[in-house]
Length: 84
Image (cartoon, rainbow, N blue to C red; front, side, top):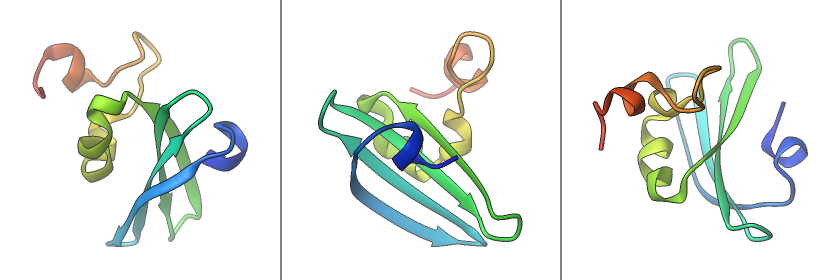
C-alpha cells in the first residue's frame, strides 16, 4: 500500500531516512488531511495512515507511536494520554 493510491493526491512536506526505514509526511489539499508513509527497505513493506494535523510533525518523527489501532483508531499511547 502507498499513500498515493490509498489516500489520494498529496504533496510531500518532509522526508527522512535512517536505519533501513524511510518516513514521509504528506498533506492532501483536497480535504486538508495529513498522512504518514513508512517504508522498510529490508522487507519492502509500506505502511500509510492518516494522522491529525496537530500531531503530524510528532508522527513524522515517531510514526510507530501514532499507528492506528483496530479499536478506537488511535495508538495505545494516545488513548492512555502518554503523549500530548
